[in-house]
Image (cartoon, rainbow, N blue to C red; front, side, top):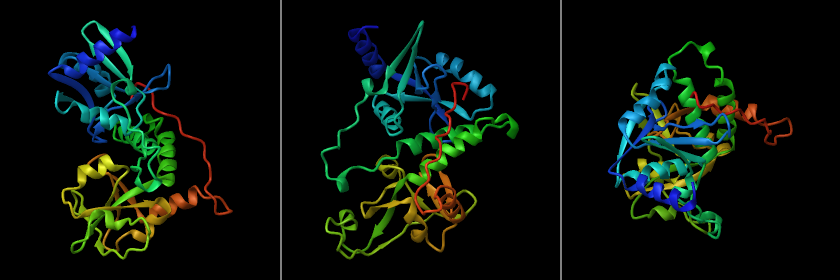
Length: 289
């Protein structure tokens, strides 16, 4: 496909009244898969519901928790922005009689923040976000444990990324303080705040944290909620005594991280000298899920 035809097809995809996409109900995120041939991380979009149902069937047969989502024209950009936050490589677009593979960056461009001061750059954890989605997709399959042959590698990759991550922690500001006051440029301002807590469906209390600004925006409903950036090593001392642990991206894959898990990851990925260990990267899942 030449450049002109590619851009014409992308425009058709973006301007259609409806776009059908697979969605992982386990991860509460777009369904992703790794190509067996190129090892590219892929998401999928379809011209019609019938084409999407044909795609879904083998995944449903393998007991993946997956469903179809339809995006209207006005909501479509949110789907691709979500993929961008995971650094997904490609989008496979299927229309009647044709399948197209587009680089995600041909559809949506990431904002260049390289010239911004470090403190002003938006926080991102694309590798963590993507590896957590792969893990949730596999661990949630309703099959015997011995059939989840990739689970160990997927957990390893996610755990490494958890340990290396820095997180957004919300804080409810007191009085007339502004959200930007919580991270003053000079580092000297005295800010008063409370840490919000949330409950899961069983009534257990957790402290919400987020991989990136997109996930934080899905949670934030009050202009008085500011944010702090906390590296993994600093999470434990920020954990409220009233919380069982953290919940990472509560409106997304809602991964629970207990105090014991934090301690365990520190032991697991720190060598005898106190430096971060560098374990091998886990293998990604293939296009069967």
